[in-house]
Length: 178
Image: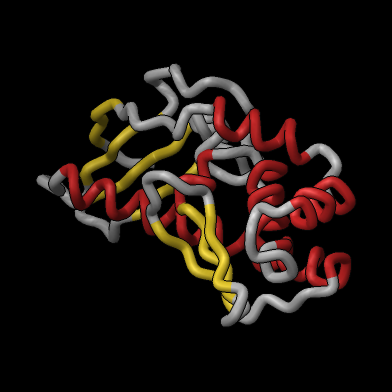
């Protein structure tokens, strides 16, 4: 998968480099369908002339969700047999205080869309964490034992996840074509 977050942490599998390069992204105003494209090390957001900041944000958010929809199903499929669980569905949602949640009765997991801005191994940690709640619904000793058994580096992953910035939001204005 491709990384972003200067670009790089905006996409699962991106690097852990801080998103502090203001040249990492550009906005192009064109009479074309809104889109997001990667060009080796940069992100280009194409919007119609005069698009509001809210519209620009919505295009990026939809793109982020599409990246997560590519990354999450293979992780679930990989971990279901290892954990002996079946996820009946997953949902993406903007969350202010949690990386994920689980409805163990329904077999659903819910993941924070901000995870798109984290490296793929940390997305995997959250997916495994929520899937294990299908077995142990609370953060009980049993849950912690399961985490240690199936994802031994979970404490490091949790610490790193909580230390990383949420992501890059700096864009430079540019007009023109590809």
